[in-house]
Image (tube, rainbow, N blue to C red; front, side, top):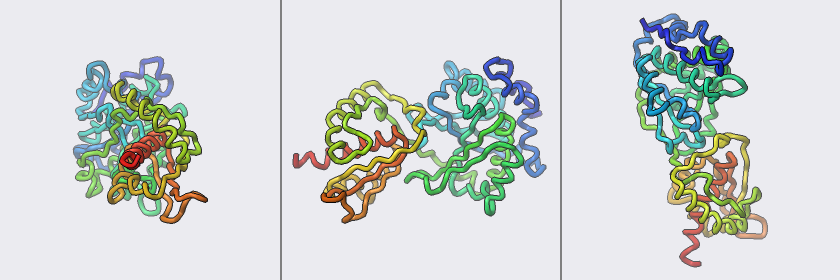
Amino acid sequence: HTHFPNATPAAADPRTGALSARGNMDVDPTTHMAGAGGDDGNEGTILTLKLLIPGTAAGSVIGKGGSTINEFQTQTGARIQLSRNDEVFPGTSDRLVTLGGTATAILGALHLMINKLVADSEGIVAGNPQVKLVLPNASCGCIIGKGGATIRSFVEDSQAEIKLSSQDRMLPGVTDRILTVTGAIEHVLRAVALVATALSEDDGYAQLSQRPSTYASHHGMGMGMDMRGMGGTGGMAGVMAGMGGMGGGMGGGMAGGVPSLMPQASAASVSVTVAVPDEHVGAVLGKGGRTISEIQVVSGVRIKVSNKGDFVEGTKNRKVTLTGSHEGVQIAQYLLAQKLRSSVAPGA
């Protein structure tokens, strides 16, 4: 009764190619649930599953006037919600999709979404679909297993590539980790089914998955800023020289509404060190470290301030190192410069 005969509307689309055709052979989402321990009892359990999609791909899933997302909900019985276009997962330019319903309904909805994204050439890595699940850190143990045994068994069973983001790379204020699943459609669905089954059996997951999500809001925090004077090597002179132009550029960016962060925000990591006068480090840190935490969450960049007394040679300037994507580092530099400007303005 839970078979979805229409589960692959995109299969006939020539743009999906062999991938979708192969997925159409045996991808009845119900078959992907059953093998997880052979117990079908989980099919009736109501689950919440969160995943990320590139901001650029959101239109594909929503459709004109919400037509596509409504069709997916009607076909599968799953509830599908997207974060607003200015609400992205911290450290990324990805929007959050929340799927709710039985495991079978969720897998059906995910299957339709993947097919649509593949048809529109979105969410594909090295020729294969990629799904990024957002998991509460506290529930990751049931996915990893003792010594990594569970996640290894999921890889062997599904034949998908499954990677969990490092706990050490979680940004301040963020309690979720990213599980990235890559492979052919049927392999990805099988892997997600195994993960969903494990989560449904985890005591704390149901409650944790209902918590409000942490978002980085990018109102006016886009690429309208003028980064002149913000060269790769940084240095306080570079920061200060860039401030005037950046302020103007930022105003222009804000006037244009909510710009989107570029998809390559997760590209190669860069590291920039800037010098900050010792007396102004407090403004960068904020009360109880709040300011630096907020900047890290918004920009997705890791920020390290040198210890007291650890100065740039021959100066009384502390070293502030920013590590992350090129765009994220630019945003963090702008926010730091803004804080420094407000702290030096009274005496200027």
